[in-house]
Image (cartoon, rainbow, N blue to C red; front, side, top):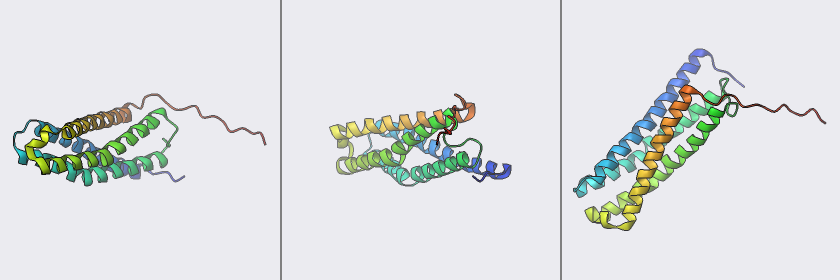
Length: 173
């Protein structure tokens, strides 16, 4: 397998960090917009918060998730880390799957539903049980996304759990 030289590796790490920073930043924006939506008495602000989140879920969330995943895979394959050689990488891969499910899929669906409900009912949507369930699902998704991204950053820096013990191939024919 092809390996990167030091300069190529640094540029790929920079790209990976930029995409990851965008993912984290958008998650924080989602949190701020959710707090704003939960505390407003203005139907326009309520709808705008969910509309902005929905636009971000279709654009920045998707692009940053794809960019982070692609650069992360390339870093694993084109460096000494590998995809399955270290426990910390495997944990990050699991958290990445969670982030993919939460980001491009759950956030898109939940924000679309919130936009639909607030477009139909304005502030009256706040009284709709479907809106309440959707709002709390969105809150849980945002919080889980932030926690998973922070954990990935921490794991990337500390690289806990070490290398897996690889079984040697059997020489039986």
